[in-house]
Image (cartoon, rainbow, N blue to C red; front, side, top):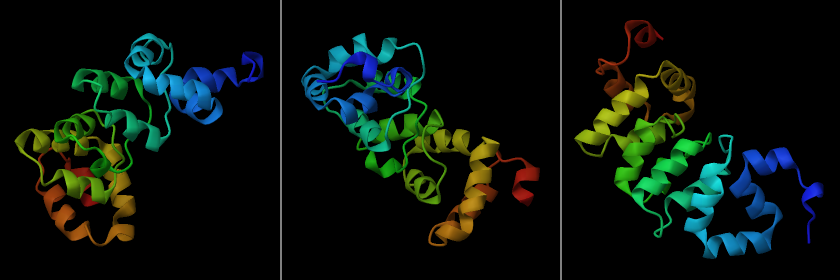
Length: 168
């Protein structure tokens, strides 16, 4: 058994879910069987934003026992972004993740979001209106040549991207 004084208290407070999953397997088992109580009484009441391992974030967001609203609260509490949006099974949640700028700015994520509905298109426009996201995408353009032509065409047509960003 691990004594609390031996734990990295900063990590425990800022990476709680992942920290417990990695460092306290018995506690993690208990949390899994009482997930909603943990989310309500621990995760969401921690003072700091939470950094969570990407696989753990996907696991929480795909959990069938948590409501859509609870998943939105998890997204709002997290500093971590979903690395691969296609790992999220609920299309409405994918749209919300995009709208909240909580997915990694990758060409494959943009491509995946382009096939959704009008609400998703609005969320995608919000996502790409954030200059940092477009800059990250432009930096990755050569690495992901599979998606680049299709997406570059899409981006150039978006009114939410200002002229100085288009020139890059």
